[in-house]
Length: 344
Picture 1 (cartoon, rainbow, N blue to C red):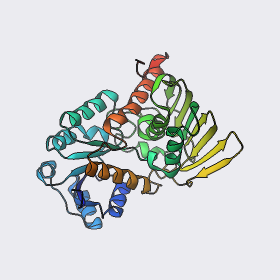
Picture 2 (picture 1 turned 45 degrees about the horizontal axis):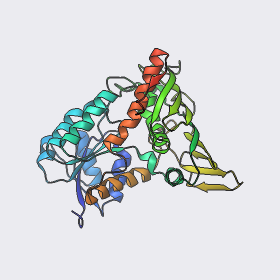
Picture 3 (picture 1 turned 120 degrees about the vertical axis):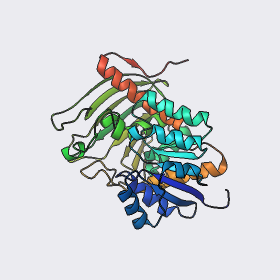
Picture 4 (picture 1 turned 180 degrees about the vertical axis):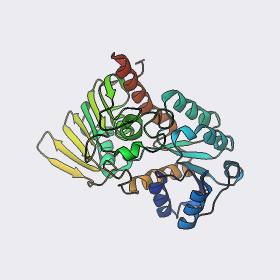
């Protein structure tokens, strides 16, 4: 395995597959796309013809093949049977976020892979932007000192036509609204820097902008296990859509990440900038972003398989953001402080 490309199968070829397919094309030296699969035969043929990759006719064919891993890009309500089938065959799994529609189902899916001893990675690609990478290094190295406070803002926009698609913004298909579908990225990145959240107070709801089942607006106050405090505000009703922002106030500097660009204001007066502003899918076009971050994440997963080490974003790691989203939803329903996890 170490000296030859890994064989991947792609399962699920909907709108979200575009950056994955582009990234795989750029990773041809380390990943061979052995075939693509979707339940819709016409879509399967279209992707096969356009991208020049073979087709698989069924999940069973994929499970019985000699591939090394699968990239699963199905909607979250169409995951469990796919994961069971692939995990039983012993093949590694890289899967689009969220892990599942809620914390209970997400935990079940992660445990299926752990019991089968199958590597599971989750596509939470915002960790792999240049600005986010620099932010991570400065936090984990101790260069900026302890995190004291956090602000995460996601003022995105979606047309009503987006939510008019069958199942979009519902609990049965998506698992919810802005929190689990859009804000999950900035929340995951935030937790990778602050460590786990301990408790939250929150409010969620729907503005008159959209007709949908789940929330298009959420706000929360968070206390983290390390003692830091923070605030989150996320919406898909902010026309025309603006870049998400993550701000961390630390002992020796304050850091502001807008889209992919990080600005560091040091207490001694220095100002440092890393990365570039780029589209993140926050406006009318949900797919208005490059495939670079997907490419880096997929490459990390492939390299982890070759090395026999966990990927940077594993299924177990991704459960942290599911715990936070679950706690925000519970706090919003109850009006009380919701515990994310106990501090031992």
